[in-house]
Length: 235
Ligand SMILES: Nc1ncnc2c1ncn2[C@@H]1O[C@H](COP(=O)(O)OP(=O)(O)OP(=O)(O)O)[C@@H](O)[C@H]1O
Image 1 (cartoon, rainbow, N blue to C red):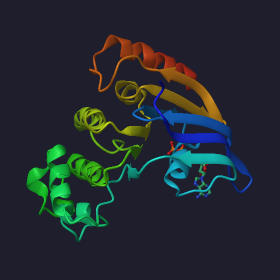
Image 2: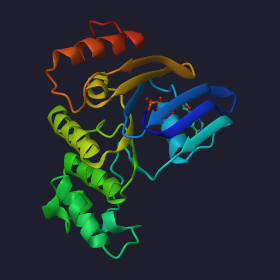
Image 3: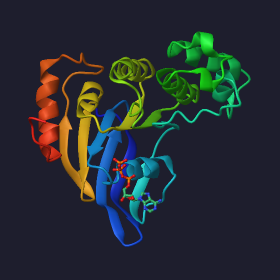
């Protein structure tokens, strides 16, 4: 039996002024699925994610969300005058929130940074803290908007590995917006290409992430996505 839908878009329209961003968009994301959204700049990827998060309202159609959500953005958005640990417990209500935060930090390899100030973290560490903050909310659905867009290539590979592992360990449903097709195929079960208001291509990825960056199958799938994006395959 197919897993239950966590996110469902039915004929979703979104406009900004006279500009139509999404046109009668249909999408179902099932429980436990890792979906990536790629597309040229300005095609509405972040808008889609913001609609899922409830930060934007659609102009038409129906959006259904089943489960708790947490979001991590490209900028870690940690509050600079609170310790890393306090950034994580902020907004948590359980009596065990300190323990929850401690565990989440340990899961991302930052157990020694609980008392650190956010500004003393490297870019990669700050992004790990941001993931830990999302994890501490015990979400069913994790939304990632270009989470690794601002870190160097090597840190990026390590963080991809981490995201893949967290997803597996917590059986998360993940929707990630990325510009990096290699990252998308490395982590996802399915990649969609957004363009002109609709899903222009959909590429299922066999097996389960995180896949090894040298996996030869990834290059072929990445090539397919680049062609769907209208980018020359040799690029
Ligand atoms: N709050 C807003 N008000 C007006 N226009 C907006 C607003 N948010 C987004 N837009 C416009 O909607 C379009 C889609 O934006 P969005 O950020 O969703 O694209 P994107 O695919 O995520 O782009 P990028 O890859 O560059 O991040 C863009 O033309 C953008 O300027």
